Image (cartoon, rainbow, N blue to C red; front, side, top):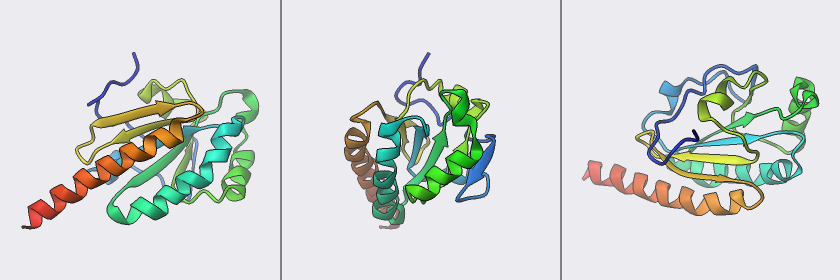
Length: 159
């Protein structure tokens, strides 16, 4: 059964290899909004959206958003770590990216799609899921809502 709204953030621990970051543990994602992004090198739409996702890191990272991209192989050729690394460099991926050749992380999310976006609030509850061709466009407005709510809570706590 796919993740439902309000579901807790599944484990992102494991994976075959990490790029742009040492391996991340879920504890490091507590208390901040988190976007988990699934993609594959065999997915043209996925590769086209990579620069946009890096742009979100620039736009929302300073406001607390953490982004982790999960490379989810869909076919044998997608398991080539060197090819994944080349795509990360070519598309200037800035966010942490884990290659999930054994689908350890993918199975925890019960994810079947690329591209796919799972947005969690600072309490670790899922607030938005989008997948497919228009997913990147749809998820950005949800990112803004979650970031705005997070900012308001933080500022309210200071007052």
